[in-house]
Length: 194
Length: 194
DNA sequence: TATCTTTTGATAGTAACTACCACTTTTTCC
DNA sequence: GGAAAAAGTGGTAGTTACTATCAAAAGATA
Image 1 (tube, rainbow over the protein chains, first blue to last red):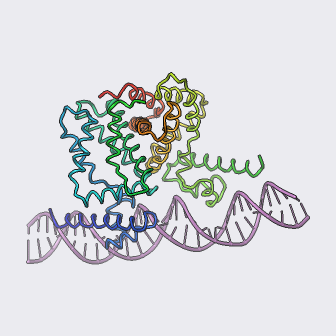
Image 2: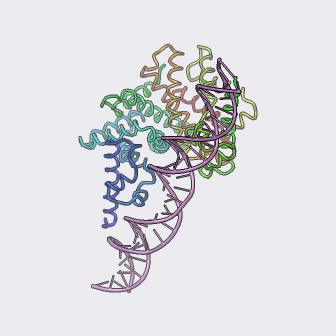
């Protein structure tokens, strides 16, 4: 890996880290891009070269691809939903204490700042498409298949429900999205009796 | 109703109408608030007094409350999902040709403009909460009940899937969100077999 | 008519984001 | 190793959504 690429990774990391720090300290809306750029020791121009919007500094989730890969590796006997649950469990258990803290903090930020929450939409749509593709490969169907799409939609919807549930609790430091997500998936897998 | 109130309704309507017209003609991002204000013959200050953001001129959906009310009136024998399907069918059949056109146009706008799509998130979250409340009343459970929330999440997720499916088709003038939604709900009601 | 309240428009400002250009740093090729 | 090409950086000058403030106009009330 050339020097140029290493430098890029470093600046990207620095910007994101300083952004998160400032958001936590002062709040999202109260932090300007100017401040972030200054703290990361780059110009505003550079900031916008690395992140198309201020939102993206928080919204980028490095865990997504890891989760998908783990999902693909789960044994074939499991139902698709059981495979999701196993994958999330595996990935989160691999996280170090510090990474776990950082991830929870990020999720808290996303949930608490209304501007960020609304920007989440596109992430959900993208996630749904990726999920549809992954499960299609798993059960040997077309990703464009109607049932596959509906299934992915339902799973993403359940994730949304878990998020908002966490949101409502979230006065204190709990905010256990993964746990709530797992419970919700279990319910969905059991047939959604009402 | 006093003159003051009538005037307010009129300005509100004028702003929204001119906004939609301009968005369709020139695109959402290409239309400035200044243009809308000018077309509606008000100042920018007044614009922002009526609509907190530019987005809100498109995002307000007058059909939501009507749908909920219809849902509550559906016969008790129907499963909750069957009740949703019956309600949407009823409400859309009540629309005049012109209203239907206008509603489709609005939905097309929301789907096509990325800025608007991301602003949809809060609408979905709100919709999910309202749906949870409605279905809780219907089956005699607590709206905070875990199963109820998961169910509402799944339904909203399925709606999301129907929307994106429509989005992908949507090169031509089709864009039949209600139809796709109905089909997706049918699948969900049959147990999401994969 | 006189006064009190609401609505309006004008002005000035902030902050996110874009376009452009000159300058420096890294890579590539001889 | 050095020159040319490519990529990355910072600065400046915009545009636009949105906020704050205030004086003038219009409507309600008596």
